[in-house]
Structures are given as C-alpha cells and as structure tokens.
Image (tube, rainbow, N blue to C red; front, top):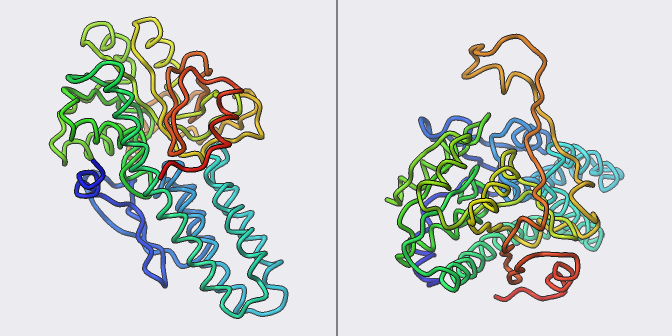
Length: 358
C-alpha cells in the first residue's frame, strides 16, 4: 500500500526553500492558490496566528523552520545570540496555545540547539533538524494511513460511509494527512463509498479545504452544515466518524476543532464508530485529562463577519475554536506508534513506551 500512498501525494502546504519558508495561504483556498514567503520568526508566528498555516502538525513544522530563520538573524547579530533566541521561541510558542505539536517541535529544536550551540555549523544542524521534523511527520502520516485502513477493514470491511470534521489532510500536515489520510488510503483500497464533510464553522475548513482536497482526488464528497451531522448519522448509513486532534492527554481525552465533541456524542447514540488519527507528537502525557487543556478563543469578528462583511447582530460572542472529547466516547486512537482501542490512562502510557512502527 505504501507505494500507492506515495503516488497519491499531490498537495502540500509547506515548502522550505533554504532562504525562506513558503506557506500555501489557506485563507484564500479554494479560489486562489498563493504561496507566501516568510523570512523571520515574527513572520512565521504571524502566519500561524492568522491561519495562513493551520493544522496541528503543520503548525509545529512551520515553527521549527521559524527557529532556523531566527537563529540565522540572532547569530549574525553576535553576542549572546542563543539567549536572545529565547524571545523567538516564546513568540512562536504563543502563536496558538491549544495544539501541543507547536511546543513539541519547539522543544525539539531547543534541545538540538543546546547540544550543538558551540559548533561552527550550528545553523546547518538546526536546519537539518527542522527538515527531519517535517520528514518524520510525512512518514508518520503514511504509517497512520495504513494502520487506520487496517482498523476499518477489521471492523466493517468495504463500502464505508464516513463523516469527517475540519481539515486533516495534506494541507494540515507535512504529508498525506492524518484523519483525511486514512480516508484517502481507504478510498485507494476500494473501501470508501461516500464521505460527508462538515463545513466546520467559523473558518469553513471543511467546505474550503477538505472538500477541495477530496474533490481534486475524485473521492465522492458531500458537504453538509455542521448541524446536519446527527441527521446524516441517522439517515445516511454512516459507519465511521474520523477526525484529527490538536492535543491528546494522558487519559485519552482529545482536543480538536470545535464541534468534535458533539459529533462523538451523536456517534455514540447512533452506533457509529469514532476514530481519532494523530501523530504521537500530539499526545501530551504531562496533562492528566482534557480539563487541563488550554482552549483558544478567537476574535468575535470570525462569528459576526463573512469576508469582512458584517452578517450578525452586534452582540457579545463566545468563540472557542476547540473542544474536548472524553476518552470514553472514542473507539480508537491511531498514531504512528500503533493504535489504542477504547483509550484510558494505562493504554496511553503503554502506547507512548513503544518505538515507531516504521
């Protein structure tokens, strides 16, 4: 299957070109495919904050390259450039608080810096590390796609109708995708009959990004309003809800795009299996449960405006962009280290002790 997955890689959102980090501007998709060049940590942090790049794995990768850009500037300035670089680490870390991949990637870059700071080729070493983070995510995507297909085959075989939320494809990662990667792989294996994609308000990642990715690959996709999901589960024969994650805690609770929690509740009620697909870098074993996850809230304009035009009454808003799905609503978590069915604290700890499968 791996060769087929590699052949199916058609979309990318991150392109490191040595002197600059180029990001596909996901705010303008699907109408305009434009690449923006970033040459500083400040520019990368702003791109993450402004949703030019989004998706937990992609955010971490972009931040790693942001460290490389910052290190070049700081080292050229002389003095205690390693100490000064901490300002850039903090700037990147503050760009989005919920996705743990961001801090994971920054910690990995900081560790590499501390081990190599005395070397003359330290800048090259940091660049190699960022590229390795990018490539390891791509490899993890391919492994998760194969594992997820195996889970689907084992439980229900072919002719699946699945529902997904937000965007978890190539646009959100360093390669094939997480949840959408499993869906793409299952389609290549002849196991998917229909995909329903939640529009995913308020940024419409489902209608703008997921539907675009699936349609471009000829995968049958039906777009629906978020509020139609329960009705679809009841009437359209959905067998799986497959989603990604921005942070998974030690007990298996999952933070993901707002609306995921209600999907899990509805899936439980309708007897639909619920799969979470995410790399192990998304798992935060330092947090005991989802109650400890910081939930990002964004500006009211995202709810009150569309395309810069006001469409809502000028009232107070509540705009959390993530929610937490309790572990007891999740059938399986798929990572590149393996799978966890009916996750709990003991099973998550056992997973994190494993080495990668590939």
